[in-house]
Image 1 (cartoon, rainbow, N blue to C red):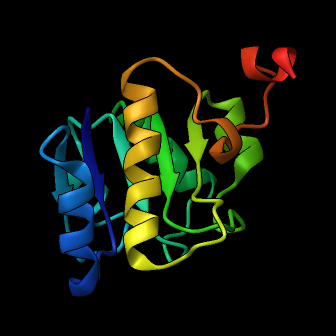
Image 2: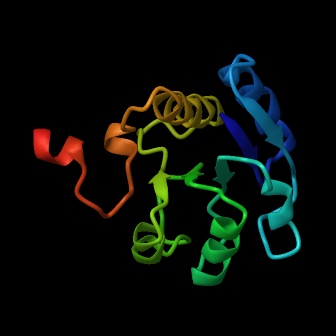
Length: 139
């Protein structure tokens, strides 16, 4: 998958690169996601954000306009994402729900989400979509 990760801190880079293992076309930038930097996501399938990147209705529409379909937040919380609007617009959304919130663990969780989507699978408990899917029907 082609992905871009915004708001990357220097100490996160190595963990994300190692967790990726050259599987995905992953771009890491220190810029936050906003209306001036959203164009960096052009041609990407997935946007990876931090809890400092705000995905309100306007930003979601900007991402949709450039064909981004999936969003991963490198946080447990999703309060910085308008989940209702994102679901309505058809985005797949995931977080990193594990208790271990070290940078290494967050990087591994992020790549597990990318790997699952890459193989057409649900991200399981990391799923933040507010729609009923096949995984919900199995539970």
